[in-house]
Image 1 (cartoon, rainbow, N blue to C red):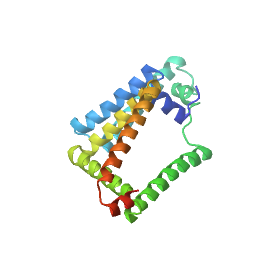
Image 2 (image 1 turned 60 degrees about the vertical axis):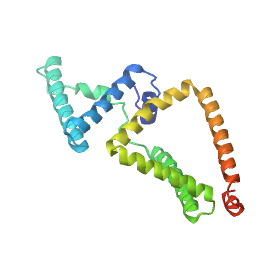
Image 3 (image 1 turned 30 degrees about the vertical axis):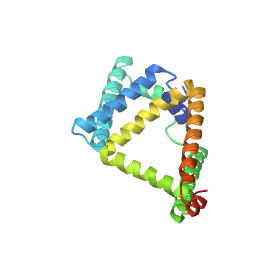
Image 4 (image 1 turned 180 degrees about the vertical axis):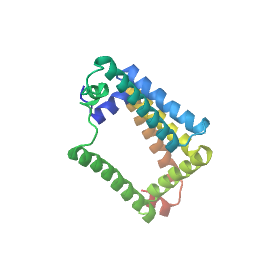
Length: 200
C-alpha cells in the first residue's frame, strides 16, 4: 500500500480504522506515561525504542532468511517488501505546501500581535492579554508534558467528534459567539465614551 504521510495522519486522527488509531493512541499514551512516571526523558525513551526496534528487526530478518533458503546468500530482506512502497521523505511540492501553511499562520499571528501591541484596537489588545493570562495560569498549573498531553488528546478526539457532530457544534459555536458579542457590547456600553470609541 502506498504510504502518503498526510493521508495516513488524517486516517489515524479521524479514526477511520479503529485498530490503527487505537494502536497509535495507546502507543502515545504509553510514551507519556513512561516520560512522566517511568524515569525516562523523551530523548532516552525515543533512543531506547529505536534501539529495540532495530534489534528486533535484525533478529527477525536473520531468522526469516534462514527459514526461506538457508543455503542462499542473496535472500531478500523480509521487511523490505513491506516498506518498499512507503514514502520515507517529503517531495519538494509537499514541503512547499507545508511551509506555506506554517508561513501563513505565523504571519497572521505576527500581524495580530502587532495590532495588539500598538493598541490600534483596544478590544484586540485586551482579548490577547486575557488569552495570554489564561495560558500563563494553565502553564503554572500543568507541566509542559501535561500541556503536550492535553494537545495530543484534543488532536485525537476533536477531528472525529467534529466530523460526526459538525452541525450541532457549528450551531453551538454561533450561539456562543452571538452571546459573547452581546455581553461584550453591553459591557462596553457602560464604559466612558472615549474608551467606547477605542473599543469599536
